[in-house]
Image 1 (cartoon, rainbow, N blue to C red):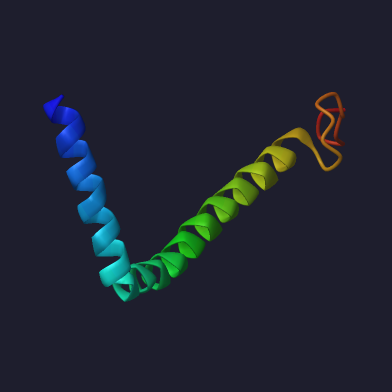
Image 2: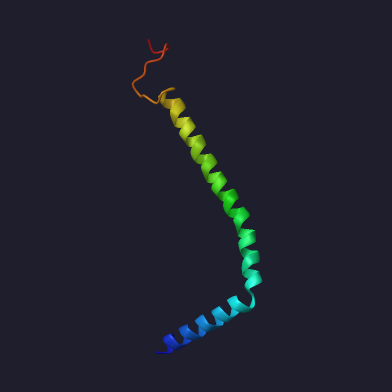
Amino acid sequence: MTSIVFGLIAMCLGLWGLVTYWWYIVDVFVAIIPLVLLFGGFIALMAGIKKTGLKAKMGLNGDKNVTTMQEK
């Protein structure tokens, strides 16, 4: 029972904080958006580099059974 009461009190204080200090929440989102874009771009770059490296290992068209001039 006490956990329910403390949970409701915490929710009320959190809602009060959001309503009272909403501009801080906006500032946090404004600060987080460039970080998310930077991190997402880094992940996409690493995925592209890995995929390009795998294509280079398998051959130009991606077939593992392609024989090159050096193998003949």
